[in-house]
Image (cartoon, rainbow, N blue to C red):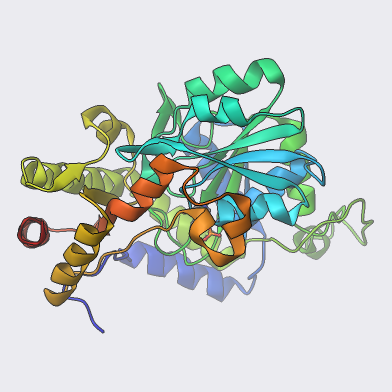
Length: 376
Ligand SMILES: *Cc1c(COP(=O)(O)O)cnc(C)c1O
């Protein structure tokens, strides 16, 4: 099926193509100087001391958990309303994800009060997801976590460029922050991720683990700096390659402008839908200004109204999507009983995400806005 208005779209410029061509012609394809340059650019862009590129956002989350030494017997609190990788990374380490509720369907990020209720002596970390690019309550989570020595991992896979804690950028406010460059994300290169941190020891651990915990890399040996290597831990191959690093660095220069385009589109949606009967907007103006707008979703009265709206939009060639609550997935059903996380469940049941990208036009906003009104 080819959609008249697809859910998302990617901007590729001549500069991107030139960066890719330069990389291919150089003959060096795996992690090397372009990956280093992409990391340096991200350090500067985020005003954070350390950034380690990896092969995906999921790999970034896994290495963040490993750098914190999470393992069997440890519990990590994760919002029930998120993409499953936020919980999968905990299970990769043998630790246990504990699902917590979001504040409300209108504010579908982790609720610090519910996090506090679920803390046990085994709780070692909280995964703060900035869902759809809207900032989670980092100050509230810090107040709960810091006195107990519980680490905060920011899952900023959907939130690069969001302001999460006053002025801090998403990924720089927790113990470690994880970004994704998956093709639907704001800074997309196909597949890729990054771990940000202010802690030099955690950064060193992530860098070691991303390449088998070897004491030298292929580039070091190619440039004659190292002849061989030792292996000093149990690591992985989570390296980024040069083509994606070159593409990511080329795209970074216009990321602020692309996020601003997404934000303007979100404002446009909100104006068109503010008084639409049967439609509830999520978040508020302040969150719209702080967020970086991975997705724009609205709430309908209930699941039935949402399903009907989906069909009306699909008939008009408008693609939409919906995020399931984690414990509704077969693999995650045993992690919480349905009915026990009411705000997350209502959010998952009632929302529909509408088309949004750095290419969204006013005509598309008109068409989608009118279709949503007709459906509700
Ligand atoms: C996309 C995403 C991830 C995983 O990132 P990948 O790059 O696809 O592995 C993790 N958490 C959230 C919230 C995401 O949206």
